[in-house]
Image (cartoon, rainbow, N blue to C red; front, side, top):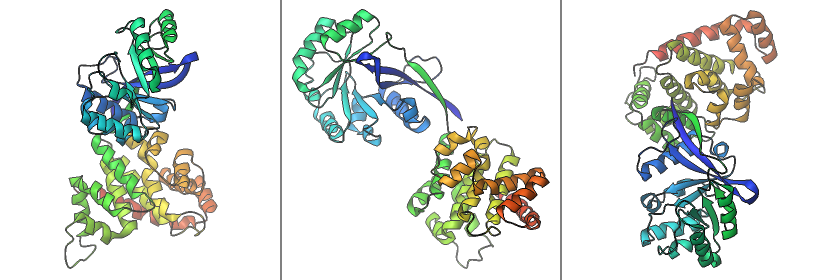
Amino acid sequence: MQKVHVARQPIFKARNKLYAYELLFRDGPSNAFPKIDGDTATTQVLNHSFFSFDFDQLTAGAYGFVNFTQELLVRRVPLMFPPERLVVEILEDVEPREPVLAACRELAKAGYRLVLDDFILGKKLDPFIELASMIKFDVRQSSMAEIALAIRETRGTGVEYLAEKVETWDEVSAATDAGCTYFQGYWFARPELMTTRDVRPQAATLLQLIRESSQPDLRVDELERLVSRDVSITYKLLRYINSAFFRRARPIESVRQAIIYLGEREIRQFIALVATSKLCTNKPDELVRTSLIRARACDALGKLLPSDRVDVSELFLLGLLSSIDAIMDRPMSEVLRDLPLAPSLRVALSDGRGTLAECLALVLDYERGAWEDFARRARNVGIDEKAYPAIHLEAVAWAQSFIVLPD
C-alpha cells in the first residue's frame, strides 16, 4: 500500500454556495506543487481522484475541475471520465488549432463543461469561447479593468465568469461588479490536502480479478485478459488444469481453454483463491492459510444447509473475503466499495447480519474453540454440529496443499 495525495480548492457561487472543487496534483504531504510536467500532473490527478479516492466524497458531490494540456485534449483523455462530474479546464498555453478544437467540439457534444483558464482578451481564443461554458480570470495577472472589458466583449456568448486567486474582500467585490459570479482563492479557502491509501498496481489487478470472478455473468474474454496479465497466475492455472487430478489425455495450453474447461464455479474459486493469496505477499502465511480454510469450510457448509437458507454459491467467497481487510490494510467498508458483491454478501461481511454472517460466525467459533457459541449457531443455521469437524479437517488439508503451490 502507498499513500497518494490530491489537493482540492473550493469554487463558490455567489453567496458562498459550493459549486465545485479544483483538483490539484501533489506528490507528498507538503501540499506544494512539485516540478513536474502538465501531462503527468493531470494524469496523476485523474488516476488518484477517480481510482484511489471515492470521487463523490472527494468533491462532496460537486463538480471536479481538472487542468488539461493540449496533448491530453487531443488524445480525448477526458472521455474516460463522467461528464456529470468532470469539468475540463483548458490551460492558458493551449492554442486553438484544429486538432484541439476537434477534440473540444467532441467533448462539448458529449456534455462536458469546458473552462478557459487564465483568460486574457486578445489572444485569438474566439474558437474556444464558442465551445466554453466558463472563463476564469486570474486577478493577480489581469487588472479589474481588463477583466471588466473582457466580460463586456464576451457577454453575448453565454459563458459564465470566475475570478480566481482572490485574496481580499475588496477583490471579491470588484470582481462581482465586473460581472463574475464564481470565485476561488485564499479569501475563501486555501487548497486542502487529501490523502488516502492506494493499492499497488499488481494488487489493483488482483482486486480486478476477484471482482470479475464474482460477477453474476462471467465474462470469459475479460477474465482471460486479466489472468494473462499476471505470469504467476497464468502458470498456476495451466499447472492446475494439467495436473494428474484431471487425468487429461491432451494438455490444455491456453488460458481461455483452461477457463472454459473448468467451468464457472471452479474458475471463480480458483481465480479468487490465487488472487487473494497473492495479495498476501509480505503478510504472514497464517493469514493466507486462515482465509483459504474459511473459504473451503464455508463452501462445504452449503452441502449441509437447508436449500432455502442461503445462496450456496456465495459461501466460498464469503470465507475467502473474511480477512480481506487485514490483507489490504484497509477497513472492510473501504475494500467492499471496490467489489460489486451481492447485497447479502456485502451485509454479512460489513455488518455481520443475515444467514451468511451466521455461517461465517459458525466457522469462526470452531476456529477459536468457542464450543458453546458453535453449538448454538449450528442449531440456528440448521446443521448437525457433529458433521462439522470433518469439514474443518478437510479444509485445513486442502488449504495447506494450495499454499505450497510454487509462485
